[in-house]
Image (cartoon, rainbow, N blue to C red; front, side, top):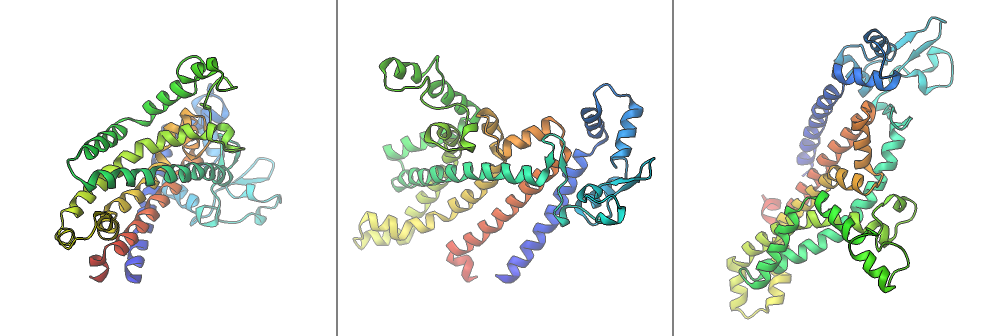
Length: 363
C-alpha cells in the first residue's frame, strides 16, 4: 500500500504540473493579455500603450520563464523606474522601499497566489473565502444526495423488474436528464416567485407572511443559513447528481442479488432483510462509492451554474467572475484548486475501493 501511494502521489504531481501549465498557457495567450491590459488601463488605449502596460507589469517575458515565476522556482521580475525606485512581482510583498528587502522568489511554492484584478484583493483570501462557502454548500448537498440516491438505488435493485424498480428507475433517469439550469429555474418559478407558482396561492390563503415561500437569492446564506434561503440550491444540485448515483447503485445491487452466494442464503432460509443488509449491501456499494467520490470534483466545478443562478458567491460564482473579467491570477488559482480536488478524491476513491473489495486487497 505504501508503494502504491508513493506511485500515485508521483503521478498526481506530474499530472498537476502538466495541467497547470496548460491552463497557464491558455490564460496567457497574447489576445488574453491584450484584453487584460485594456480592462485595467482603459478600453480605448492604443496598441503602443497596451505593449507599455504589459512591459511595466512583467507580461512581456517568455512564457516558460513567467510560468516558473508563477510557480516560484524562478526569480520574480523587477523593473527600475525613472525615479530610481524598483518595482516587481515580489516588491509588493514588503513595505520596505529597499529592493533587497523583498523576497527573490514569490510564487505558488512560497504560498503567494498573486492579486485578483476583479476583487482587488489577494487571490488566496478570495479563493479561501469562496471555497469555504462552496464547501458548506457541497456538505449539505452530499448529506441530502447520497442517502437518498443509495436508498433509491437499493430499493430499485432489490427486486429487479418490479413496479418499485420501474418507478424509481424512471425517477432516477428523469432527474439525471434534467440539467441544473432547468430544475433551478423551475424551482424558482414554482417556489420563489411572488407572481406565479405556489407562493401567491399560499399568501392568498394566509399560510405564509412573506411574499414568497422560498428565497430565490441565496446570498443571505453567507451570514445565516436557513431552510428557506438554502433549500433551493441544495435541491437543484442534489436532484441532478442523485439520479446517476441511484442508477449505478441499482445496477450494482441487481448484479449482486443474482450471485450464487445470495441464492445459497435464500435456500438456507435466511430472511430477505438479512440477505440485503448483511450480504448484498456491502458488495453492492463498491461501485457507488467510486461514483460518489467522483461527484465531489463535479460539485466543486459544476456548481457554477447553480451559484450564478441563485447569486451564491461561492467557488463556482468566483470562477465565473474571474473568467468574465479576465482575472488571470484568480483563474490560475481556481484551476490549481480544481486539479488538486480531482486528484485527491481519485486517490481516496482508489483506497476506499481496495478497502471495500477484499479480492483486490488480498491480491
